[in-house]
Length: 132
Image 1 (cartoon, rainbow, N blue to C red):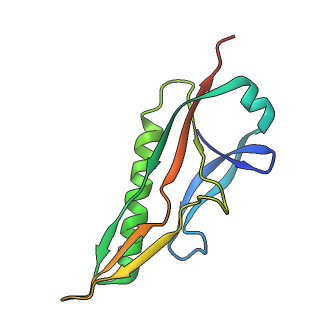
Image 2: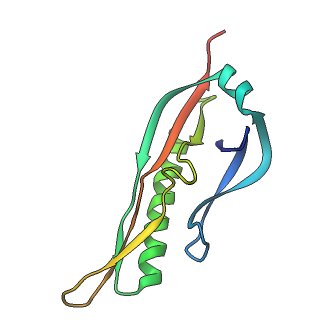
């Protein structure tokens, strides 16, 4: 399960990496699970944090951005699938602070390819239940 904090609650989310959206690296609440943030913090502890980024280059701007977002999504899914039983993956990047935004540059030589990267890495936390 992947979760993200919204205010004082944590919600389960689906990935929504969309190059046409204002926030390209997005997550959409799926309605399956939610917790009060304080209750979650009382019951779970973070065991590790991952920072991931991606980059893609293509002569077509939209293709480069889509490729970069696809590579980022693949990395998130790989971490999610590597979780042990009972572990939860959380989005630790915070809106307005260090949330990843896509950025592009254009080469000055040759074909003038577009290169897409993230301004900040996407930070993910792996959480597990505290021992009772």
